[in-house]
Image (cartoon, rainbow, N blue to C red; front, top):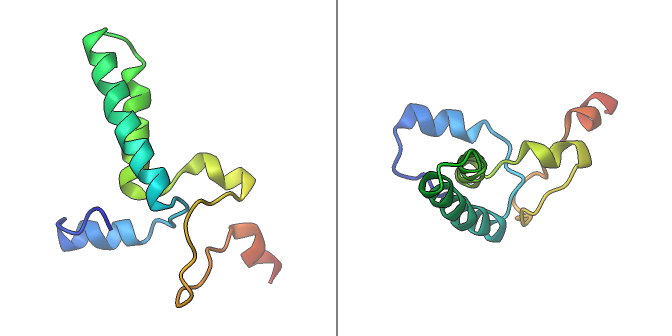
Length: 92
């Protein structure tokens, strides 16, 4: 995980967030987020806020915009349970 050196309490909270983004997706979002944030600050534009959103989602590995579409770019590890969505959990 990208945030291995955070405090134990924060690490526990972050582990509760379901991840739906793969490492490539996170890396691209992080790089684009930093670039957009810098450009937003340099040009004094509100577009820098989009950069903040991209950076936060890259760090968390979770994109709320993927949820309605049940979309995930995360690689499935065989030892791990696949991510369940609320509608699937209720149906069981």
